[in-house]
Image 1 (cartoon, rainbow, N blue to C red):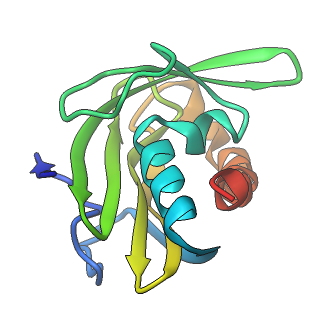
Image 2: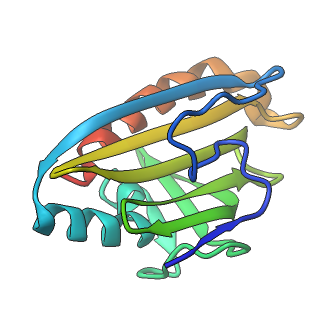
Length: 166
């Protein structure tokens, strides 16, 4: 078990997150998944296998690949027959006895600019899931003007993320 961190702004290795946000919009939410060893083991494995994303309607290629620092999986968002590629790079992975998760940053061509983290934490028997993100409009391109619509899509995706590991 190890923690591997590049330059993660969402700091998945920390219990308390106090980021320097600059012009990035900060989001953090923690939900309780339930209790018990079986839930912890499943959620800890699932989070590193991108199942938060795949169970929320996204595709992640290669399918079944574990999050590792430096990986650049292809994430595809689909809605109403439109498929959008979201280039990302994993910047941190945490795999500790009571905290497991990862963070990825967006790459040029992604609809938004920023970083997102998914963290599962064990507190006694309770299993918690935290979503963290820092976002702003893409610096250029057609997505920049659609940022208000993308914020709505983020809200919908986050609600799905909250249920993905239950």
